[in-house]
Structure formats: C-alpha cells, structure tokens
Length: 266
Image 1 (cartoon, rainbow, N blue to C red):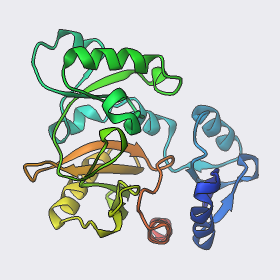
Image 2 (image 1 turned 90 degrees about the vertical axis):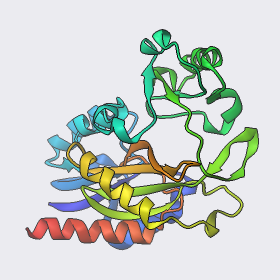
Image 3 (image 1 turned 30 degrees about the vertical axis):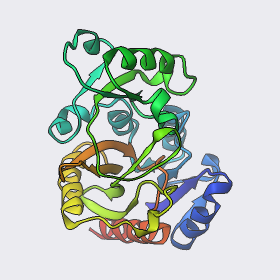
Image 4 (image 1 turned 90 degrees about the horizontal axis):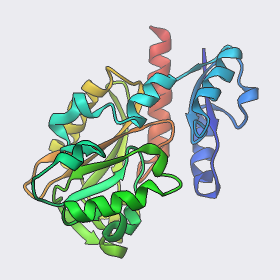
C-alpha cells in the first residue's frame, strides 16, 4: 500500500506540511484517501473511531489502529512502563494515598503546563485535589480523566512564565523500535538550541521504545533527566497527533519514508 500523509494543520504547521510533501503524497481530506497506508498528522482527532471506519471503507489502513491509540490516550501504557515513570494515581486511588510530597496534576493525555504553578504543580495532596477539581471542569482535560503523578525534580535549565521549569526534556519519534528523530522538548526556552542530550538519554529512550513497540506502531516518547542524573519517562504520545517540539521535520519524514519503504520490501 502507498503511504499517504493525511494532514490537517494551521499556520504553525505550514512549514511541516511543506516538508512532508517532499517525501510523501499528502492529502488534506479523508475522502481523497483510497487504498493507501495512512499516516495522520494532526487529523486523527477528535473523531478517531469514525476516521478509522471511513478509511477502512475506502480500502485504507491506519499506521496506528484505534485500539493502539487508546493504549496511549487511556494511559494504559502506565502498567508496562511503571518502573520507568513517576508513580501515578487516578482520581479514586489518590483519595486513599496517605503519604506526603508534591504532585503533578494533569489529564491522561493533556495538561495545562503553561499555567504550571496554578493548574499543574501541587505542593501537597490538598492542593493537588483542588487543582484536580478545577481540571475536571476544563473543556479539554475534564473528559480525559484526571491523574495525579509524583513530582520528581528534574534537571532544569531555565524558568518560564508561571514558574514553568524548562528541564532537560527531549521528544523522540519512533516507528516500532526504529528511532526516527529527536529534539529538545521546550522549544520556547530562550537557549533551546544550545542544549544537548547525552548518549545515556538516547539509550534510555531506545530501551523504552522496545517495550512500547509491542503495543503501538507510531509513537512519541518524552523523557527527562532528574536532578540526580537519572533518566525517566515523562509520557508516551501518539505520533499521529504529537507536535514536533524541536524535531527536524526533514529528519523525521525522510526517516519515516525510508523505514516504511524497507518494511514494504520485506
């Protein structure tokens, strides 16, 4: 099947669209996709199930199935990757937590990170529950279910608005176990282009990808270095919807095309 990018973006993604067109046939309407292997970019949501059904009728196959997407969106990846990521509670189990510490509060997929010290970071359980209640009424996050994550101090380079820490965090795109590209996560940081990742960080991402690839085809790993010098998994995201951060689109799409061509020949 011919690989096709089904792209839906705004002004911010125009540059990425131009790059994608260098390597792939790009469509902007699902009805134009016939008998193809579809790689959605920003076009998978909000009607993911309907998109999959429509494309199947047109003889197409998605790079990630709806079931694979839900493995990420429902935070099902926590169980197989629990050893590598901060301890997490849902709205019910957190009520029974009697320990101390600080927390990060977010939806299973999205957060209000740019309101870090008001709608994400909580210094204690009481504050975390207060933030969770506010997020439950958020039009985007409320439908995802709220999760409470142990706050793990990260190696931080800069501090942004609302106390947001620009940490040593990196975004990796993977197709199965194959690393396609990576880039510094906080593209809005003043010195973002100066930061470099260590070999240990890259190796850690590849280690996580071996596990994640058993459940999903096209995915993103966000990893970060703690103040103690250890690498942890921040979250897994669907490659169909994830923004580039500072991933070079030429590297991402050229490697994706090459990898798909290799798989097609096998």
